[in-house]
Every structure is written in structure tokens, then in C-alpha cells.
Amino acid sequence: MTDAIDERAAGPYAGRTFIILNPTAGQEDPVRLRRLIGGEFAAQGASFDLAETTRAGHATELAREAAEAGYRAVCVVGGDGTLGEAVTGLAGTPTPLAIIPRGTANQVARNLRIPASLEDAVRVAVRGTPASVDLGRIGERVFALVAGAGLDAAVMSSATRGMKDRWGFAAYVFAAVKEALNAQPVDFRITADGETMDVHAVSVMLANVGELFAHFFPLPVALGPRPRSSWQDGLFDVVVVAPRNVIDVPGIVWKALGKQYEGDDDRLLHFQAREVTIEADPPIAVQIDGDPAGVTPMSAVAVERAVRIIAPALS
Image 1 (tube, rainbow, N blue to C red):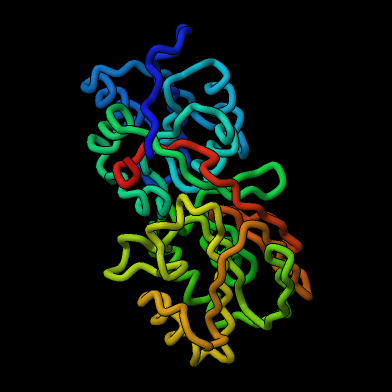
Image 2 (image 1 turned 90 degrees about the vertical axis):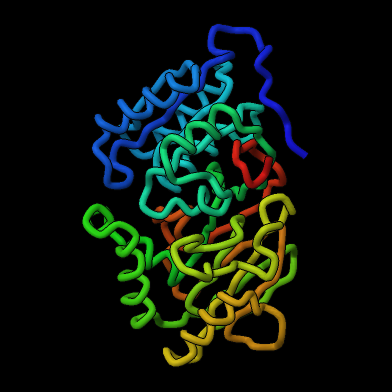
């Protein structure tokens, strides 16, 4: 079920879109990008205000202020990290989020089939219909994509801003290969909805999104057997990657590509849960929506239909 944007709300900002632009995201010149965005919104006959982020967490503040002011929507121009900050500010409010994907990977936008072209993305932002989707919450922060501990966090940390500026998405591929070759399993304790399990693994991921590397490869890596239903089920897809040695890695990737999560193979485990705590011995790096976020322990809860996103895949 979708919910229309209420254009009848009172206030000076009711018909306007508040645009949050991360000038460091992706590889485009922000001055030129601002000009293009202004032109496309004008072509759609849509009024807007625009602010650039200047520091970590700034998008959260801007999104929260825009929701309080009564803007019709908040539109993020950037990548998954900026989007994750913005939804933290919008969670629990009726103000919907629109996305103009301009980061390195743009996995949330790609999962939701939001167009990559600026013109088409603006058209969706202005003309689309919002639908309520799930988020994950860790402390005061929420996330739309995935949080994890271990190998995935090492990959995100290894893909530096300089590498992404120079190579784009290839920075993640390089970092993934490098970290996979050097990954050492650790002892994880996972508590999911009150049940505890101990595993020797290289990575534990809590996925709100359905797929990783969506539309970059012919077969994206599915984070569960039913990736298209994962946005509105109120549950995390918990994925545990536990290769016995480096020879196991290609087989694990192949199973994920084919959504082959059933069976008794203990190298790739999948289950769903609403509340999850991840501990590791020794403590290991954590990432939230691609951003480094300290080390374990990490506790998360899935919040059902916590934010509204304007996207063709959900309308």
C-alpha cells in the first residue's frame, strides 16, 4: 500500500522540496551538479530549497529540520552514507524521502529501481508516490541498506575516499578482493530474537536491503532467498559468511548469486530476526550503510515501515 504526499498541508514550505546535496559524494563537480538539479526541478515546475552538507551527521540535522518545517519531501543527492544520515532524521515522521543517486555505489537507489539519470530521478522525486519501508536502528542511528561486522566492514574501510574518487565502484571490487584474501575468521556470538548461536566466521551482516552490487553485475549478490520482499517484512535478513579457507569463497559467492540459502551448508547461513546482537572475540570492525562505525558489540532492531521513500519499485 502506498501513501500520497499531502500537498494540502498548511505552511510556507508545504509545496516545496528540501534538497540535501553531499558535495563530496561521487565524482561530479558540485557546482555543475547544483546547476543541473535546479534546471531539472524548474523543468518539472517544482519549487525547492537546497543545502549542502559540511560534516558528518549534517544530513541528519538538515532532514530533521526540513521535516519539522513542513516540506513536502526531502531529496538526497549523494550516496548510501548520506541517505542513511537523512533517514535517521526522517524516521517516524510523515515526510517522505526522494533520492537522486550520485554516490559511488548507490545500492539503496539501485535496489529500489530509482533511475540513475538525473532527469529521470528528478521526475520520480517530483511525480512519484511514496511507500513505507523498513529501517534498521542501532542506538540513535538508523540504516536503510545493511550493517555488518567483519569482512564487509573491512571492505568499506579499505575503499578510501581517494580510491572511490579515482576508480569509482572499482574501488569496492579491489577492496573486496584484497580483504577476502586476508580475512581471518573470528568467534562470533549472535543473539537473534532471544536465541543465541556461536559461529566461527569472517562476516555477519544484517540486511534491510535485498541485494548487494545491484545492477553492477549480471547477477547481484542476494542477501536472502527473497530479496524483493525484504523492504517491508519487518525483519532483518541475517547472513553469516563462514568459509573454512580461501578456496570456499568462490562457492559461497556463487550460492549467494543464485539465492541458494537453503540446505545444511554451514559456510553460508541465513535466517531472519527482528532484534539482533553481534559480539565477537576479539572485537571486530562494524559498518553501517557503508560507513565505519566502531567495533562490536553491535545491537540492532528492525523497525517496520519506519520511513516513506519515493521510488518506482514501491509505488
